Image (tube, rainbow over all chains, first blue to last red; front, top):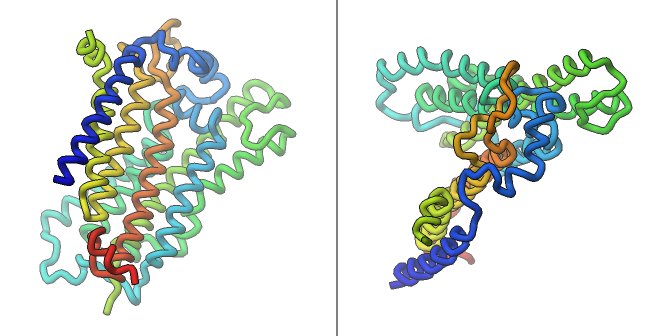
Length: 244
Length: 121
């Protein structure tokens, strides 16, 4: 009865939504208001000002660089929150269901995963490095990289993962995204411009172009590495079981 | 007439439907993980909605290649950039919520919202 009432309320809500949808501008029309405001400028000047052929990358890292810096901080804070609640995995006290299970992973599964992991990581590297000329970028490549680590941990257990990716390597890399943003931001200050600007009028045209590309690449790699490692860390601390 | 307009805005119709499904899940399911999955469905609906706002019929991906002729119709890149941000934040909140749920399960032995209500003391 209660469920039915809720269903009824939401159905009414949906009808209200639909009445709004009828009034919306038609889907996919180039003349829509959303496609006319700032977007033409992004599309015309984006390659020159943003420094990337992929305009989405230009917008994320250049026009809305502060936003992305905040977002990187959000992932980092999420990791900090997860670790504050669950603690980091530890070789002495943690184990996983995989390690304690009486049935080991089958030969087929382990072989396939071992064969597959290098290609997944290769694809992640490609996605990160090609973010400015093709679809992709730091977050997408980082997610693929993190997925490869999660994939590996699921089959081989947490202990093998901890042996492969040590804490001394992992902990500094988790802050790579914020650090790369800070470094790229201070380049602007160094040339007497604002923080995180990509326009340096003091330099020649070619030097600016090169510097912009270098900054984009630095930020992309930083974001990619940090996102992947953070996803792996979050998964490891969710996955671990305290040894009794 | 109305049906025609709804058909033209099919993506928005589906986005609103997904939103309602997600809200229904959040309200009716007692299990906290299921509640959070409902919240994720709601997030997905919002992402679908905002990306659809930026879609352009027959538009190509917003990647400018050298030697491309002028006047190519591109898809709106701004919503895509915003949603990329949104997806990552959604992942972060999901991770934090799952961590809290694991702790809650360790402490209380249940994830059922109705049972947890009686455990407040």
